[in-house]
Image 1 (cartoon, helix red, strand yellow):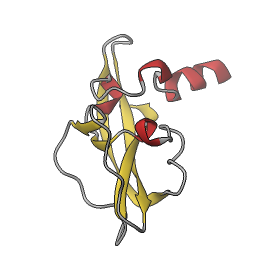
Image 2: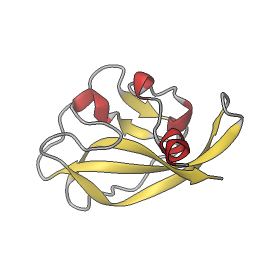
Image 3: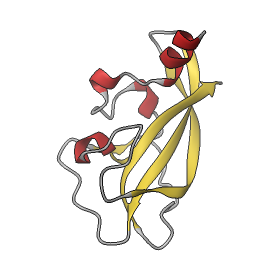
Length: 114
């Protein structure tokens, strides 16, 4: 049972830097993995935003849809530029979940099935 949980909740780390991954179906913003973070952790010097948004994304390999939570990582200063090839625009524009701060990047976390 524990191994199943890890398989379900761990996006494919080998391809974590691609906006075309199935679990990024509604991701907007820079990939945190391009800035020293990951889908599990915000990059150094940033914190998770106060809110998030959700989407059901279809995994063709498993022939199943999963709920993905998108969480912005924030800074109080100016956000660094997003490296070329790391900016995703796979859905409609989202709220600034950083309040008065700047969005640095967005994490994608699998939370369950749709």
